[in-house]
Amino acid sequence: VHEHTIYPTETYMGNSSTCWAVDVGFNGKDYFFYFSNGGTNFGVMRATTPTLSDATDILHKPLVTSAQVDGKTHPYDPTVLEDDDGCHYIVFGLHERTTSYMISKLDADTMLLAEEPKVVVFLPSVDANLSMPYGDKPTLHKRNGVYYLSSGTFYSTATHVYGPYTFRGNTGTMRPSKNYGETGQAHGRYFTWNNQWFHVWCEFISQNNTMTALSEEVPKNYYRYRDSWMTYTHYRANGEMIDDIRFLDQDVARLGVGQYDAGWAKLSASWYMQAQNNATKVELAATVPTANASFARFGVQFDTPLASIVFPNLYNVADGNISLGIDSCAGPHVVLDFSAVHDNSTVSLGHYRCDQVHTAPYVASVAQLHHDQFDRVDLTISYRGWGNILH
Image (cartoon, rainbow, N blue to C red):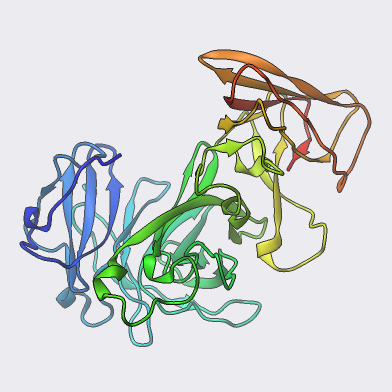
């Protein structure tokens, strides 16, 4: 749904065509739209709604200029983080041989810098002594006390917002084809919603869903167009991030995140859109031991009775079967209840009972369920017991 368009003429940029990357922050009262003026500076607009329909250039000048960073970086591509204590930080710039990203705390109104920008220091990876690749498009998020600073699919972590940041790796699979734009050029954002983590990013049309650029004959303007992709992000016990490319290999071109097909060969429990009452995502033991994070497996552990996960928009229930696996069963008499909401009415789809004790890697089909009365439901899986892990 198209909500609103902001034109450079509404800002100090005037009649400009150098509208580069942006980010949006919220200070508990107002929304702030941080926008790049090419690679030379960036500004900020204030709005009262998340649609930014009443956004106003409140400074009438850049928030950060080249003069303020004194050659330490190029001031563009801002990314904003609200920390646990309510303080906001902004990271921006270009990480390359002679420059680095810079970070600054914002003032209480998040309209101005509260301090001089500081250079972000990167450390090589602990295991392989690899360095954070060069790039712009920084994005900053925090999980479980760890700060994640990313550029495309590459990321580094720190225990303090100012760093130093240690290079950790790549969230994508780096497949030679059909990588959905999951490369170092994947400008995007990580965010959490309803106890699930997501990654949304752009794919340059020039990649044409491969890692091969288009020919030189293609007009340069064509490279401005991009697709957008989104998938679930999983975290290993050691803090490594993994984007779920397996989900994208499903029929997401037709459906997308938050929509499912009962005819899929497998509906992974880790693809839920909502987790309630201590249902938590966990890494499973690999069927084939590997250190490659791209092949890690994830499921959902039900830690308390009535814990549940929700899959809205499950299609083709009448024609397909819902197939899940179970990695361990605390049994006996452990029960999983399957229910669906359709036209505001809740319908039971049955249940699965585990009558004996199993330990990982026990794998079985939890349910082969269907309902002939409707084609799309919002599926909820609830647990009577504790300790079970679905995958």
